[in-house]
Image 1: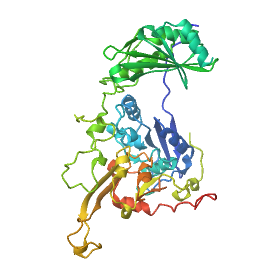
Image 2 (image 1 turned 90 degrees about the vertical axis):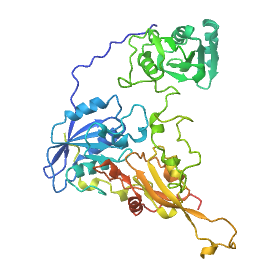
Image 3 (image 1 turned 60 degrees about the horizontal axis):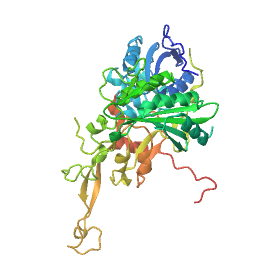
Image 4 (image 1 turned 90 degrees about the horizontal axis):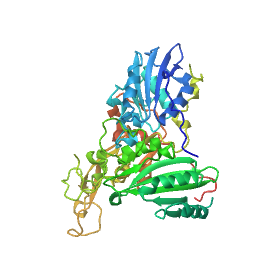
Length: 152
Length: 182
Length: 147
């Protein structure tokens, strides 16, 4: 047998980001744009399945777009994360999920990891954890909807 | 195929410069760089290793760079490692893409991480590192700058925060002795 | 596409989580002798400790000790000035909790403490002590375990 050349895959039109609408009850909804880059993406996926349990605070905002960065941001991928953020429509908030998105996390000393997504995107809320529980994301969405921060 | 069978077949078909070593994971074929494509083609055709697993390099410091390939035979269920050693001053090797197409991206990654040039590669461009990155990160003399530049919280001695440090400071783990932060 | 709608009572509170769940790390300052093992072993370098030495009153000062004055050197002890854990870096590996020889660090299952500013994710001594009140009692040994 000899080496076999397979056809080179060509990307057609790329799919747009999946928008997940989280039902927060009382006629309030939050749209989540998940940049699931690494392991934290699994926890975000688990949280989205329980989406009906977001509890809005007194100043609830409907139609809010939350850009969730879940996972390690590498220097190579950073421009695309920035582009995805810029394409998120207003009103938008950025939620940094997990240690890698907060500050580089366990990979802070790597040669190719961006030390936190806040290096190039303004972050509204940092959710700590490695990975944070899915419920921590939902509590974080509560805070963005107006619930008081701190020990929720 | 048993390790003994592999060694016998290799001994019969390959040039004398190629050594066979049996390890607990299978047989390793060690060759000089000139016979690299020969042993890969033999692994593919003579040993039925149709599954190309990975190609990478090892920085052996003064001895040079060792390039290692792992292939597997799905029918015979045996692993074969192929290994060669390149001089540090001129790390060039013929590309394995003529034998195994799957080596393409592995050779790109080895090129950007170690600086090993694969001649005949269809497109030897960096794969994982961002554009403009200088240096080869997985070489042993590439220092993890963040660990040397950042102050290590564990360097303090108990109870010495306000005492001038006259004892030799512990270097943080991962920083070579005597390396100065930029 | 809305997610599966479940009732609000479905989310676990911290008290429902299994024993030794890794939510946040609490510090019992009384047990800390500033040996610095946790700061040294932390792979992320996220524990910040400041301390100084204080002399312990000796026999001449009316403190403990059976040695007559003039014998033995002045005993000193370490006093903790600052103990902070940066939870924006922490990867919750638990090496600090395991390595502490004096059981000063504990796991607490509290998992929700987001902040709007990353500097607020560095918890100082007072906040780490507050987490102590959320540390559950250790679970009972298994039925076949030796006491």
